[in-house]
Amino acid sequence: MPELTNDYSRLSQQARDYLFRDHLMLVNGQRIAAESGETIEIVDPTNNEPIGRAPSAGAIDVDKAVKVAKCAFEEGPWPRMTPGERERLILKLADLVERDRVMLAEIEVLESGRVFGAVQAFDSDLAVTCLRYMAGWATKLTGKTIDLTAPYAPGMKFFAYTKLAPIGVVGAITPWNVPLVQAVWKIAPALAAGCTVILKPSELTPFGALRFGELALEAGIPAGVVNIVTGTGRTAGAALASHPLISKISFTGSTAVGKEIARASAEGLKKVTLELGGKSPMVMLGDANLVNAIPGAAMAIYANHGQNCCAGSRLYVHSSIYDKVVAGIADIASGTVLGSGLDPESQMGPLVSRKQQERVLGFVERGVAAGAELVVGGTALDHVGAYVKPAILANVNHSLEVVREEIFGPVLSVMRFDDENEVLKLANDSSYGLGASIWTQDINKVHRFAEGFQAGTVWVNVHNVLDMALPFGGVKNSGMGHDLGEEAVLQNCTVKAHVINLT
Ligand code: NAD
Image (cartoon, rainbow, N blue to C red; front, side):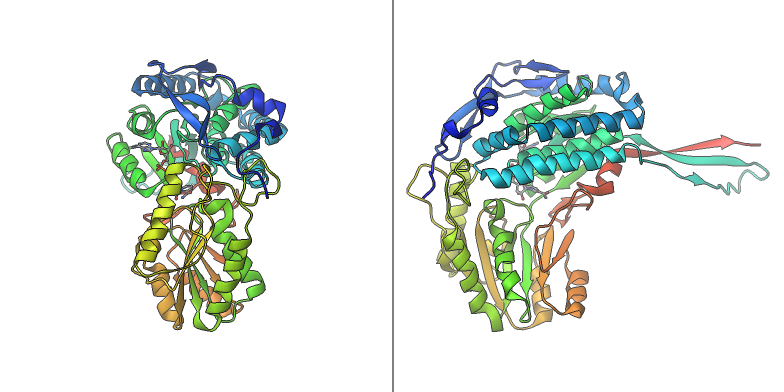
Protein backbone atom coordinates (compact mmCIF):
# COMPACT_ATOMS: atom_id res chain seq x y z
CA MET A 1 0.00 0.00 0.00
CA PRO A 2 1.45 3.42 -0.89
CA GLU A 3 1.63 6.24 1.63
CA LEU A 4 -1.43 8.50 1.68
CA THR A 5 0.43 11.56 2.94
CA ASN A 6 3.33 12.99 0.92
CA ASP A 7 6.69 12.16 2.46
CA TYR A 8 8.73 15.34 1.88
CA SER A 9 12.01 13.48 2.37
CA ARG A 10 11.36 12.05 -1.10
CA LEU A 11 11.63 15.54 -2.65
CA SER A 12 14.80 16.56 -4.44
CA GLN A 13 16.92 19.09 -2.59
CA GLN A 14 16.24 21.59 -5.38
CA ALA A 15 12.44 21.29 -4.92
CA ARG A 16 12.75 21.53 -1.14
CA ASP A 17 14.92 24.64 -1.36
CA TYR A 18 12.45 26.26 -3.72
CA LEU A 19 9.20 25.22 -2.05
CA PHE A 20 10.06 25.99 1.54
CA ARG A 21 11.26 29.54 0.99
CA ASP A 22 9.33 32.83 0.82
CA HIS A 23 7.31 33.14 -2.38
CA LEU A 24 6.94 36.50 -4.05
CA MET A 25 5.38 37.68 -7.29
CA LEU A 26 7.49 38.41 -10.33
CA VAL A 27 7.03 41.85 -11.87
CA ASN A 28 9.58 43.61 -14.06
CA GLY A 29 12.14 40.97 -13.15
CA GLN A 30 11.77 41.76 -9.43
CA ARG A 31 10.39 39.49 -6.73
CA ILE A 32 7.76 41.56 -4.92
CA ALA A 33 5.14 41.13 -2.21
CA ALA A 34 1.57 42.38 -2.52
CA GLU A 35 1.26 46.07 -1.60
CA SER A 36 -1.16 45.09 1.20
CA GLY A 37 1.25 42.45 2.55
CA GLU A 38 -1.58 39.90 2.31
CA THR A 39 -0.84 36.30 1.43
CA ILE A 40 -2.75 33.12 0.60
CA GLU A 41 -2.03 29.75 2.19
CA ILE A 42 -1.12 27.00 -0.28
CA VAL A 43 -2.13 23.55 0.89
CA ASP A 44 -0.92 20.01 0.17
CA PRO A 45 -4.14 18.06 -0.50
CA THR A 46 -2.66 14.79 0.81
CA ASN A 47 -2.59 16.13 4.38
CA ASN A 48 -4.55 19.41 4.18
CA GLU A 49 -1.51 21.16 5.68
CA PRO A 50 0.07 24.38 4.37
CA ILE A 51 3.22 24.07 2.26
CA GLY A 52 3.75 27.81 1.95
CA ARG A 53 2.14 31.16 1.21
CA ALA A 54 1.87 33.25 -1.95
CA PRO A 55 1.16 36.97 -2.18
CA SER A 56 -2.47 37.95 -2.58
CA ALA A 57 -2.36 40.70 -5.19
CA GLY A 58 -4.88 43.53 -5.11
CA ALA A 59 -5.95 45.87 -7.91
CA ILE A 60 -2.92 48.11 -7.16
CA ASP A 61 -0.48 45.23 -7.72
CA VAL A 62 -2.22 44.16 -10.92
CA ASP A 63 -2.16 47.74 -12.18
CA LYS A 64 1.58 47.93 -11.49
CA ALA A 65 2.23 44.70 -13.37
CA VAL A 66 0.09 45.72 -16.35
CA LYS A 67 1.90 49.08 -16.61
CA VAL A 68 5.25 47.26 -16.55
CA ALA A 69 4.11 44.89 -19.30
CA LYS A 70 2.74 47.82 -21.33
CA CYS A 71 6.05 49.66 -21.03
CA ALA A 72 7.95 46.48 -22.01
CA PHE A 73 5.67 46.17 -25.03
CA GLU A 74 5.89 49.79 -26.17
CA GLU A 75 9.48 50.60 -25.30
CA GLY A 76 11.27 47.36 -24.53
CA PRO A 77 13.28 45.14 -26.86
CA TRP A 78 10.95 42.12 -27.01
CA PRO A 79 8.54 43.09 -29.84
CA ARG A 80 11.42 44.78 -31.68
CA MET A 81 13.79 41.81 -31.65
CA THR A 82 14.22 39.79 -34.80
CA PRO A 83 11.89 36.78 -34.87
CA GLY A 84 14.99 34.59 -34.83
CA GLU A 85 16.20 36.16 -31.61
CA ARG A 86 12.81 35.62 -29.96
CA GLU A 87 12.82 32.03 -31.17
CA ARG A 88 16.27 31.47 -29.70
CA LEU A 89 15.26 32.79 -26.26
CA ILE A 90 12.04 30.73 -26.14
CA LEU A 91 14.10 27.66 -27.07
CA LYS A 92 16.52 28.54 -24.26
CA LEU A 93 13.56 28.70 -21.88
CA ALA A 94 12.47 25.24 -23.09
CA ASP A 95 15.94 23.91 -22.28
CA LEU A 96 15.74 25.34 -18.75
CA VAL A 97 12.29 23.84 -18.14
CA GLU A 98 13.71 20.52 -19.35
CA ARG A 99 16.70 20.91 -17.02
CA ASP A 100 14.32 21.50 -14.07
CA ARG A 101 11.65 19.01 -15.15
CA VAL A 102 11.87 16.92 -11.97
CA MET A 103 11.73 19.86 -9.63
CA LEU A 104 8.85 21.47 -11.54
CA ALA A 105 6.93 18.20 -11.41
CA GLU A 106 7.58 17.88 -7.67
CA ILE A 107 6.23 21.38 -7.08
CA GLU A 108 3.04 20.53 -8.97
CA VAL A 109 2.67 17.20 -7.12
CA LEU A 110 2.70 19.01 -3.81
CA GLU A 111 0.32 21.81 -4.70
CA SER A 112 -2.12 19.87 -6.90
CA GLY A 113 -2.04 16.36 -5.35
CA ARG A 114 -1.41 14.57 -8.63
CA VAL A 115 0.95 11.64 -9.18
CA PHE A 116 4.59 12.41 -10.01
CA GLY A 117 4.94 10.35 -13.23
CA ALA A 118 1.83 11.86 -14.79
CA VAL A 119 2.78 15.37 -13.67
CA GLN A 120 6.25 15.02 -15.16
CA ALA A 121 4.75 13.86 -18.48
CA PHE A 122 1.86 16.32 -18.65
CA ASP A 123 3.20 19.39 -16.89
CA SER A 124 7.00 19.43 -17.27
CA ASP A 125 7.58 17.52 -20.51
CA LEU A 126 4.54 18.83 -22.34
CA ALA A 127 5.57 22.35 -21.33
CA VAL A 128 8.97 21.77 -22.96
CA THR A 129 7.34 20.46 -26.15
CA CYS A 130 4.95 23.41 -26.22
CA LEU A 131 7.75 25.96 -25.82
CA ARG A 132 9.76 24.35 -28.63
CA TYR A 133 6.75 24.17 -30.94
CA MET A 134 5.71 27.77 -30.27
CA ALA A 135 9.30 29.06 -30.57
CA GLY A 136 9.23 27.97 -34.20
CA TRP A 137 6.22 30.17 -34.92
CA ALA A 138 8.19 33.33 -34.12
CA THR A 139 9.99 32.99 -37.47
CA LYS A 140 6.99 31.78 -39.46
CA LEU A 141 4.41 34.53 -39.06
CA THR A 142 3.74 36.09 -42.43
CA GLY A 143 1.19 38.36 -44.09
CA LYS A 144 -0.12 38.43 -47.69
CA THR A 145 0.21 40.67 -50.70
CA ILE A 146 -3.18 41.70 -52.07
CA ASP A 147 -4.10 43.21 -55.47
CA LEU A 148 -6.59 46.06 -55.03
CA THR A 149 -9.49 47.00 -57.32
CA ALA A 150 -10.38 50.42 -55.79
CA PRO A 151 -13.10 51.33 -58.38
CA TYR A 152 -13.39 54.87 -56.93
CA ALA A 153 -9.76 55.64 -57.94
CA PRO A 154 -9.56 54.92 -61.69
CA GLY A 155 -6.03 54.91 -63.08
CA MET A 156 -4.36 54.59 -59.72
CA LYS A 157 -2.18 51.62 -58.81
CA PHE A 158 -1.53 50.36 -55.31
CA PHE A 159 0.67 47.84 -53.62
CA ALA A 160 -1.10 46.40 -50.57
CA TYR A 161 0.00 43.86 -48.04
CA THR A 162 -0.97 42.59 -44.61
CA LYS A 163 1.32 42.16 -41.66
CA LEU A 164 0.82 40.25 -38.44
CA ALA A 165 1.62 42.46 -35.47
CA PRO A 166 1.66 41.37 -31.81
CA ILE A 167 -1.66 42.26 -30.21
CA GLY A 168 -0.12 43.97 -27.16
CA VAL A 169 -0.27 43.09 -23.47
CA VAL A 170 -1.87 39.70 -22.82
CA GLY A 171 -3.51 38.81 -19.51
CA ALA A 172 -3.56 35.06 -18.87
CA ILE A 173 -5.70 33.46 -16.15
CA THR A 174 -5.29 29.73 -15.51
CA PRO A 175 -6.79 26.91 -13.40
CA TRP A 176 -5.21 24.32 -11.10
CA ASN A 177 -5.69 21.01 -12.92
CA VAL A 178 -2.51 21.05 -15.06
CA PRO A 179 -1.06 24.32 -13.78
CA LEU A 180 2.34 24.51 -15.43
CA VAL A 181 1.32 23.41 -18.87
CA GLN A 182 -1.73 25.69 -18.81
CA ALA A 183 0.55 28.62 -18.04
CA VAL A 184 2.89 27.65 -20.88
CA TRP A 185 0.00 27.16 -23.35
CA LYS A 186 -0.90 30.80 -22.76
CA ILE A 187 2.54 32.37 -22.45
CA ALA A 188 4.45 30.57 -25.24
CA PRO A 189 2.25 31.62 -28.21
CA ALA A 190 2.04 35.17 -26.83
CA LEU A 191 5.85 35.32 -26.65
CA ALA A 192 6.22 33.91 -30.16
CA ALA A 193 3.92 36.65 -31.46
CA GLY A 194 5.99 39.34 -29.68
CA CYS A 195 3.51 40.16 -26.89
CA THR A 196 4.22 40.80 -23.22
CA VAL A 197 2.27 38.87 -20.59
CA ILE A 198 0.87 38.96 -17.07
CA LEU A 199 -0.12 35.52 -15.80
CA LYS A 200 -2.42 35.00 -12.85
CA PRO A 201 -2.28 31.32 -11.91
CA SER A 202 -4.91 29.63 -9.76
CA GLU A 203 -4.71 30.60 -6.11
CA LEU A 204 -4.47 26.87 -5.30
CA THR A 205 -1.36 26.23 -7.44
CA PRO A 206 0.83 29.32 -7.96
CA PHE A 207 4.31 27.96 -7.19
CA GLY A 208 5.09 26.23 -10.50
CA ALA A 209 4.16 29.36 -12.45
CA LEU A 210 6.36 31.54 -10.21
CA ARG A 211 9.31 29.22 -10.84
CA PHE A 212 8.56 29.30 -14.58
CA GLY A 213 8.73 33.11 -14.45
CA GLU A 214 12.20 32.88 -12.90
CA LEU A 215 13.31 30.52 -15.66
CA ALA A 216 12.09 33.00 -18.29
CA LEU A 217 14.42 35.60 -16.77
CA GLU A 218 17.28 33.11 -16.58
CA ALA A 219 16.74 32.34 -20.28
CA GLY A 220 17.38 36.00 -21.06
CA ILE A 221 13.81 37.04 -21.84
CA PRO A 222 13.89 40.71 -20.83
CA ALA A 223 12.40 41.83 -17.50
CA GLY A 224 8.77 42.94 -17.82
CA VAL A 225 7.95 40.53 -20.67
CA VAL A 226 6.73 37.67 -18.44
CA ASN A 227 5.13 38.85 -15.19
CA ILE A 228 3.48 36.54 -12.66
CA VAL A 229 0.88 37.95 -10.28
CA THR A 230 -0.63 35.65 -7.65
CA GLY A 231 -3.93 36.08 -5.86
CA THR A 232 -7.60 35.26 -5.86
CA GLY A 233 -9.83 35.25 -8.89
CA ARG A 234 -12.31 37.70 -7.39
CA THR A 235 -9.59 40.31 -6.74
CA ALA A 236 -6.46 39.77 -8.85
CA GLY A 237 -8.18 37.92 -11.72
CA ALA A 238 -11.03 40.40 -11.96
CA ALA A 239 -8.59 43.35 -11.90
CA LEU A 240 -6.66 41.81 -14.79
CA ALA A 241 -9.78 41.03 -16.84
CA SER A 242 -11.04 44.61 -16.58
CA HIS A 243 -7.73 46.48 -16.91
CA PRO A 244 -7.89 49.00 -19.78
CA LEU A 245 -4.27 48.51 -20.91
CA ILE A 246 -4.72 44.79 -21.59
CA SER A 247 -5.35 43.95 -25.25
CA LYS A 248 -6.23 40.29 -24.86
CA ILE A 249 -7.40 37.99 -22.09
CA SER A 250 -6.65 34.30 -22.43
CA PHE A 251 -8.65 32.37 -19.84
CA THR A 252 -8.96 28.71 -18.92
CA GLY A 253 -11.38 27.77 -16.19
CA SER A 254 -15.03 27.29 -15.39
CA THR A 255 -17.83 28.42 -17.65
CA ALA A 256 -19.36 30.68 -14.99
CA VAL A 257 -16.10 32.61 -14.52
CA GLY A 258 -15.47 32.61 -18.29
CA LYS A 259 -18.75 34.46 -18.79
CA GLU A 260 -17.79 37.01 -16.10
CA ILE A 261 -14.48 37.54 -17.88
CA ALA A 262 -16.19 38.04 -21.22
CA ARG A 263 -18.44 40.67 -19.62
CA ALA A 264 -15.48 42.42 -17.93
CA SER A 265 -13.53 42.42 -21.20
CA ALA A 266 -16.41 43.86 -23.21
CA GLU A 267 -15.95 47.38 -21.82
CA GLY A 268 -12.50 47.78 -23.38
CA LEU A 269 -13.37 45.52 -26.38
CA LYS A 270 -10.50 43.24 -25.46
CA LYS A 271 -9.95 40.17 -27.54
CA VAL A 272 -10.89 37.14 -25.41
CA THR A 273 -10.19 33.44 -25.71
CA LEU A 274 -12.06 31.20 -23.31
CA GLU A 275 -11.26 27.53 -22.70
CA LEU A 276 -14.07 26.46 -20.41
CA GLY A 277 -15.71 23.41 -18.91
CA GLY A 278 -16.92 20.26 -20.58
CA LYS A 279 -19.13 17.20 -20.24
CA SER A 280 -17.62 15.22 -23.06
CA PRO A 281 -19.55 12.21 -24.39
CA MET A 282 -18.05 8.87 -25.41
CA VAL A 283 -20.23 6.70 -27.66
CA MET A 284 -19.37 3.00 -27.77
CA LEU A 285 -21.06 1.11 -30.60
CA GLY A 286 -21.78 -2.62 -30.52
CA ASP A 287 -18.78 -3.44 -32.77
CA ALA A 288 -16.21 -1.54 -30.66
CA ASN A 289 -12.93 -3.35 -30.02
CA LEU A 290 -13.36 -3.75 -26.27
CA VAL A 291 -9.73 -4.71 -25.64
CA ASN A 292 -8.93 -1.13 -26.54
CA ALA A 293 -12.23 0.57 -25.70
CA ILE A 294 -12.63 -0.49 -22.05
CA PRO A 295 -9.21 0.75 -20.83
CA GLY A 296 -9.51 3.69 -23.22
CA ALA A 297 -12.78 4.84 -21.68
CA ALA A 298 -11.47 4.28 -18.13
CA MET A 299 -8.42 6.41 -18.94
CA ALA A 300 -10.64 9.07 -20.52
CA ILE A 301 -12.43 9.68 -17.22
CA TYR A 302 -9.90 8.71 -14.55
CA ALA A 303 -6.71 10.28 -15.96
CA ASN A 304 -5.68 13.26 -13.84
CA HIS A 305 -8.31 12.07 -11.30
CA GLY A 306 -11.08 13.21 -13.65
CA GLN A 307 -9.85 16.79 -13.34
CA ASN A 308 -9.62 17.28 -17.11
CA CYS A 309 -11.82 19.72 -18.93
CA CYS A 310 -12.25 17.25 -21.81
CA ALA A 311 -12.59 14.13 -19.59
CA GLY A 312 -14.94 11.54 -21.07
CA SER A 313 -17.50 11.86 -18.31
CA ARG A 314 -20.64 10.62 -20.14
CA LEU A 315 -20.47 7.12 -21.63
CA TYR A 316 -23.20 5.83 -23.95
CA VAL A 317 -22.84 2.07 -24.49
CA HIS A 318 -24.79 -0.10 -26.92
CA SER A 319 -27.06 -2.58 -25.07
CA SER A 320 -25.29 -5.57 -26.64
CA ILE A 321 -22.00 -4.78 -24.84
CA TYR A 322 -23.27 -2.70 -21.90
CA ASP A 323 -22.76 -5.22 -19.08
CA LYS A 324 -19.29 -6.22 -20.28
CA VAL A 325 -18.15 -2.60 -20.61
CA VAL A 326 -19.47 -1.54 -17.19
CA ALA A 327 -17.85 -4.58 -15.54
CA GLY A 328 -14.54 -3.94 -17.34
CA ILE A 329 -14.34 -0.28 -16.34
CA ALA A 330 -15.44 -1.17 -12.79
CA ASP A 331 -12.52 -3.61 -12.56
CA ILE A 332 -10.09 -0.88 -13.59
CA ALA A 333 -11.64 1.62 -11.15
CA SER A 334 -11.59 -0.76 -8.19
CA GLY A 335 -8.01 -1.83 -9.02
CA THR A 336 -6.71 1.76 -9.11
CA VAL A 337 -4.17 2.29 -6.33
CA LEU A 338 -4.76 5.54 -4.46
CA GLY A 339 -1.87 7.21 -2.69
CA SER A 340 0.28 10.31 -2.40
CA GLY A 341 1.82 11.65 -5.57
CA LEU A 342 5.41 11.27 -4.35
CA ASP A 343 5.01 7.52 -3.73
CA PRO A 344 5.91 5.65 -6.95
CA GLU A 345 3.30 2.96 -6.18
CA SER A 346 0.40 5.44 -6.39
CA GLN A 347 -1.76 5.50 -9.49
CA MET A 348 -4.19 8.21 -8.37
CA GLY A 349 -3.69 10.96 -5.79
CA PRO A 350 -6.21 13.10 -3.96
CA LEU A 351 -8.30 15.78 -5.64
CA VAL A 352 -6.88 19.28 -5.48
CA SER A 353 -8.60 20.28 -2.21
CA ARG A 354 -11.03 19.21 0.48
CA LYS A 355 -13.55 21.61 -1.06
CA GLN A 356 -13.30 19.85 -4.41
CA GLN A 357 -13.57 16.47 -2.67
CA GLU A 358 -16.83 17.55 -0.97
CA ARG A 359 -18.14 18.90 -4.26
CA VAL A 360 -17.46 15.64 -6.12
CA LEU A 361 -18.89 13.44 -3.32
CA GLY A 362 -21.98 15.67 -3.30
CA PHE A 363 -22.56 14.97 -7.01
CA VAL A 364 -22.32 11.22 -6.37
CA GLU A 365 -24.72 11.34 -3.42
CA ARG A 366 -27.30 13.38 -5.33
CA GLY A 367 -26.92 11.09 -8.36
CA VAL A 368 -27.62 8.00 -6.26
CA ALA A 369 -30.52 9.71 -4.51
CA ALA A 370 -31.98 10.49 -7.95
CA GLY A 371 -31.85 6.82 -8.99
CA ALA A 372 -28.39 6.21 -10.48
CA GLU A 373 -26.73 2.90 -9.57
CA LEU A 374 -23.33 3.34 -7.86
CA VAL A 375 -21.36 0.40 -9.29
CA VAL A 376 -18.03 1.20 -7.69
CA GLY A 377 -16.16 3.92 -5.75
CA GLY A 378 -17.55 7.38 -5.14
CA THR A 379 -16.52 7.53 -1.49
CA ALA A 380 -13.66 9.17 0.42
CA LEU A 381 -10.81 7.29 2.08
CA ASP A 382 -10.64 7.25 5.86
CA HIS A 383 -7.85 9.84 5.72
CA VAL A 384 -7.42 13.60 5.88
CA GLY A 385 -6.31 13.74 2.20
CA ALA A 386 -8.86 14.82 -0.41
CA TYR A 387 -9.15 11.33 -1.93
CA VAL A 388 -12.17 10.09 -3.89
CA LYS A 389 -12.32 6.49 -5.08
CA PRO A 390 -12.91 6.37 -8.86
CA ALA A 391 -16.63 5.87 -9.43
CA ILE A 392 -19.15 4.60 -11.95
CA LEU A 393 -22.77 5.67 -11.90
CA ALA A 394 -24.68 3.27 -14.16
CA ASN A 395 -28.17 3.17 -15.68
CA VAL A 396 -28.25 6.93 -15.35
CA ASN A 397 -31.22 8.89 -16.60
CA HIS A 398 -30.10 11.45 -19.18
CA SER A 399 -31.85 14.29 -17.38
CA LEU A 400 -29.87 13.87 -14.12
CA GLU A 401 -27.44 16.49 -12.82
CA VAL A 402 -24.56 13.97 -13.11
CA VAL A 403 -25.13 13.91 -16.88
CA ARG A 404 -25.75 17.64 -17.32
CA GLU A 405 -23.14 19.24 -15.03
CA GLU A 406 -19.35 19.09 -15.09
CA ILE A 407 -18.22 17.17 -11.96
CA PHE A 408 -14.46 17.57 -12.56
CA GLY A 409 -13.63 14.42 -10.61
CA PRO A 410 -13.26 10.66 -11.20
CA VAL A 411 -16.96 9.95 -11.75
CA LEU A 412 -18.26 8.29 -14.92
CA SER A 413 -21.97 8.36 -15.79
CA VAL A 414 -22.96 5.42 -18.02
CA MET A 415 -26.09 5.12 -20.15
CA ARG A 416 -27.34 2.32 -22.37
CA PHE A 417 -28.66 2.85 -25.92
CA ASP A 418 -30.04 0.85 -28.87
CA ASP A 419 -30.59 3.42 -31.61
CA GLU A 420 -27.46 5.01 -33.15
CA ASN A 421 -29.32 8.07 -34.47
CA GLU A 422 -30.87 8.64 -31.08
CA VAL A 423 -27.53 8.37 -29.26
CA LEU A 424 -25.95 11.12 -31.39
CA LYS A 425 -28.82 13.41 -30.37
CA LEU A 426 -28.26 12.51 -26.71
CA ALA A 427 -24.51 13.09 -27.01
CA ASN A 428 -25.19 16.56 -28.41
CA ASP A 429 -27.92 17.32 -25.87
CA SER A 430 -25.54 19.22 -23.59
CA SER A 431 -24.77 22.85 -22.94
CA TYR A 432 -21.07 21.96 -23.41
CA GLY A 433 -19.13 21.11 -26.56
CA LEU A 434 -15.46 20.52 -25.79
CA GLY A 435 -14.60 16.93 -26.80
CA ALA A 436 -16.39 13.78 -27.96
CA SER A 437 -15.29 10.29 -28.91
CA ILE A 438 -16.72 7.45 -31.00
CA TRP A 439 -15.62 3.84 -30.44
CA THR A 440 -16.32 1.58 -33.43
CA GLN A 441 -14.53 -0.34 -36.20
CA ASP A 442 -16.96 0.80 -38.89
CA ILE A 443 -15.40 3.56 -41.02
CA ASN A 444 -18.75 4.89 -42.23
CA LYS A 445 -19.98 5.28 -38.70
CA VAL A 446 -16.71 6.96 -37.71
CA HIS A 447 -17.35 9.68 -40.29
CA ARG A 448 -21.04 10.01 -39.47
CA PHE A 449 -20.32 10.60 -35.77
CA ALA A 450 -17.26 12.78 -36.40
CA GLU A 451 -19.42 15.06 -38.57
CA GLY A 452 -22.37 14.93 -36.21
CA PHE A 453 -20.73 15.63 -32.85
CA GLN A 454 -21.03 19.23 -31.65
CA ALA A 455 -17.54 19.48 -30.14
CA GLY A 456 -14.24 21.30 -30.61
CA THR A 457 -12.33 18.00 -30.81
CA VAL A 458 -13.55 14.57 -31.93
CA TRP A 459 -11.56 11.42 -31.17
CA VAL A 460 -11.97 8.00 -32.76
CA ASN A 461 -11.13 4.90 -30.67
CA VAL A 462 -9.22 7.12 -28.27
CA HIS A 463 -10.02 10.10 -26.01
CA ASN A 464 -8.11 13.09 -24.64
CA VAL A 465 -5.25 13.19 -27.16
CA LEU A 466 -4.04 16.79 -27.25
CA ASP A 467 -1.03 18.06 -29.12
CA MET A 468 0.86 21.31 -29.40
CA ALA A 469 0.24 21.39 -33.15
CA LEU A 470 -3.50 20.77 -32.83
CA PRO A 471 -5.84 23.68 -32.04
CA PHE A 472 -7.80 23.02 -28.87
CA GLY A 473 -11.04 24.82 -28.09
CA GLY A 474 -14.73 24.34 -27.51
CA VAL A 475 -18.14 25.28 -28.82
CA LYS A 476 -21.29 26.26 -26.91
CA ASN A 477 -20.57 26.76 -23.18
CA SER A 478 -17.10 25.22 -23.59
CA GLY A 479 -15.71 28.48 -24.84
CA MET A 480 -14.41 30.39 -27.82
CA GLY A 481 -11.07 30.70 -29.54
CA HIS A 482 -8.24 28.20 -29.34
CA ASP A 483 -5.17 27.30 -27.36
CA LEU A 484 -2.37 25.40 -29.13
CA GLY A 485 -1.54 25.10 -32.81
CA GLU A 486 -1.10 27.95 -35.26
CA GLU A 487 -4.50 29.29 -34.14
CA ALA A 488 -3.13 30.09 -30.67
CA VAL A 489 -0.33 32.19 -32.13
CA LEU A 490 -2.65 34.01 -34.53
CA GLN A 491 -4.94 34.88 -31.63
CA ASN A 492 -2.06 36.84 -30.14
CA CYS A 493 -1.64 38.82 -33.35
CA THR A 494 -3.55 41.60 -35.01
CA VAL A 495 -3.72 41.89 -38.81
CA LYS A 496 -2.56 45.26 -40.15
CA ALA A 497 -3.26 46.28 -43.75
CA HIS A 498 -0.70 48.56 -45.47
CA VAL A 499 -1.45 50.34 -48.77
CA ILE A 500 1.22 52.06 -50.92
CA ASN A 501 0.38 54.40 -53.78
CA LEU A 502 2.37 53.34 -56.88
CA THR A 503 0.99 55.98 -59.27
P1 NAD B 1 -12.18 28.72 -11.99
O1 NAD B 1 -12.98 29.27 -13.11
O2 NAD B 1 -12.74 28.78 -10.63
O3 NAD B 1 -10.78 29.50 -11.89
C1 NAD B 1 -9.91 29.58 -12.99
C2 NAD B 1 -9.05 30.80 -12.83
O4 NAD B 1 -9.89 31.95 -12.87
C3 NAD B 1 -8.29 30.87 -11.50
O5 NAD B 1 -7.04 31.45 -11.72
C4 NAD B 1 -9.16 31.80 -10.68
O6 NAD B 1 -8.45 32.49 -9.68
C5 NAD B 1 -9.66 32.77 -11.74
N1 NAD B 1 -10.90 33.47 -11.41
C6 NAD B 1 -11.92 33.06 -10.61
N2 NAD B 1 -12.89 34.01 -10.56
C7 NAD B 1 -12.47 35.03 -11.35
C8 NAD B 1 -13.05 36.28 -11.72
N3 NAD B 1 -14.23 36.68 -11.27
N4 NAD B 1 -12.36 37.07 -12.57
C9 NAD B 1 -11.17 36.68 -13.06
N5 NAD B 1 -10.57 35.51 -12.75
C10 NAD B 1 -11.22 34.69 -11.90
O7 NAD B 1 -11.79 27.26 -12.43
P2 NAD B 1 -10.93 26.20 -11.62
O8 NAD B 1 -11.79 25.66 -10.54
O9 NAD B 1 -9.60 26.78 -11.27
O10 NAD B 1 -10.67 25.10 -12.77
C11 NAD B 1 -11.61 24.15 -13.11
C12 NAD B 1 -12.40 24.57 -14.32
O11 NAD B 1 -11.52 24.85 -15.40
C13 NAD B 1 -13.30 23.46 -14.82
O12 NAD B 1 -14.55 23.97 -15.16
C14 NAD B 1 -12.58 22.96 -16.06
O13 NAD B 1 -13.37 22.34 -17.00
C15 NAD B 1 -11.97 24.19 -16.58
N6 NAD B 1 -10.84 23.87 -17.45
C16 NAD B 1 -10.98 24.05 -18.80
C17 NAD B 1 -9.95 23.71 -19.66
C18 NAD B 1 -10.07 23.89 -21.14
O14 NAD B 1 -9.04 23.93 -21.80
N7 NAD B 1 -11.25 24.02 -21.70
C19 NAD B 1 -8.76 23.20 -19.14
C20 NAD B 1 -8.64 23.03 -17.78
C21 NAD B 1 -9.71 23.38 -16.94
